[in-house]
Image (cartoon, rainbow over all chains, first blue to last red; front, side, top):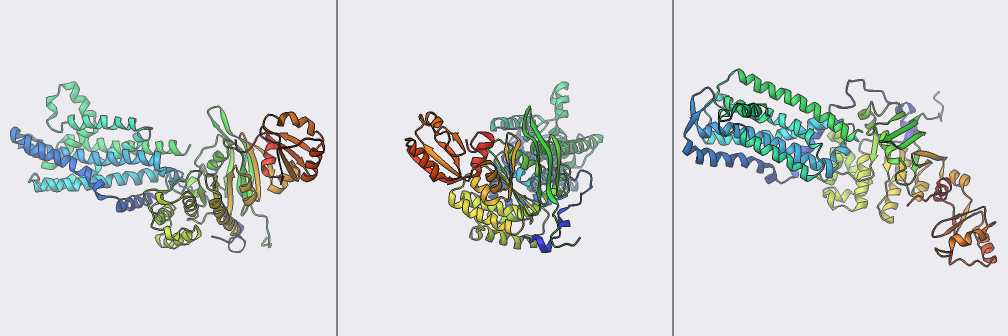
Length: 280
Length: 314
């Protein structure tokens, strides 16, 4: 603390303005938000962190091995036959990335917004809302990354990985997680009660079951196909499936572009919402 | 220039601040200046617009109109820049419950971009200052209300702020915890930190503020040092007499001429006078026998009552 008279001349009390564009929104210090996240994880119960990892693994075991025995081989991307387990594994990986990101960017954020008042206290420092959005989304991605790493390992152990392309499954999972996390946080900002939070589950579950996760899109009548193809998980599922066996098509670029756009819009949306909520 | 005592430039300069929520003016044309090193208070009842004014200073509430300059910058346009030199103690503690006591200070300091080596030392200093050294590794939810408040104040000092904003710093604390806190704030004031605090406790304002504004319904009712305000708007002493709830109003007209002025409250009658004992004698001489009587020095509460016709604490 300072003695004003000697050490601090009066000129000290006039600050010079930072003329960087958007300096009121972004202080280039998202890493401090990320650091906080890691400190919390360190003091947290690891069981909570890894619980989300098991859900898709259980699906893979029960449906891939159990149901897969009845189904036999199915046509993979490009038409060549692959085992049913190899067919659904990349789809479940996309689901896993989505779940990790959604958990962190919805329930976690909901709690911090309404009970922990964390963001209010952060915005009273030199952080801007964009720093917070980026930091929190990074933490959601980190969780998605851990799940993807673990799940890809399980796929390897089950002999479902046959090409080096499959290594790209992990970074692609992070991208899928990014898309969901950037939107999840913005959508959570509208939620006021626990009941409203259930809407998220209500949307996520059918998306998980019907996004061509367990069977090809062609089983649906055409109008339904259009709806499914508009949803983000379908693009993730298709992209992962192509990567897992290293067979690509023109649609690969569409899937990638879908996520790039989703991420950009999601980030802008979240920053806007944080600003509207806390910098009124 | 280079004179021994130059006039310090104001670190906060507010001109005609207005904040409208819907069609309610929470802040309705407030102007004031705070020079560096001053301890400045906003005194008023709940809902007077004090917290909104504080939030505008911190740049976390957009003003509807008016001009505001904090250390030469507009907090709305240069929020992060301004807040880098502000310490904020909000009305409700918002400590990070997922982190332990010392980590709360370190992580908060990181939000300002301060280095780990600096923060390690600073956090220990502040834990000493807040008398929380032995609680360094404790969970936040295990702390008492007073301890949480002190930790919030310690946290607000992590960036060595030039201005410390305190919104109702001691509301909800027991008397002992309040005195500990006042002592800590007084030390900061001695060290030259500019304090801006809101309160609806007149004793707090009298203890801590060099100068204050009395705010009611978003407007400034009076401005000055606590003693000057009391001198200007009240007599030296106040005699409080109680005749019983149903009799107070009936007796009041018979007190005409006693003291300078009479104020009738539901539970008591206040007689503003320069000599309370003498006034009490006068009342007794009129054969009016109050159930209880009390002579005290005039306070900011009396100033507020005079200016608004209402008590500070409803």
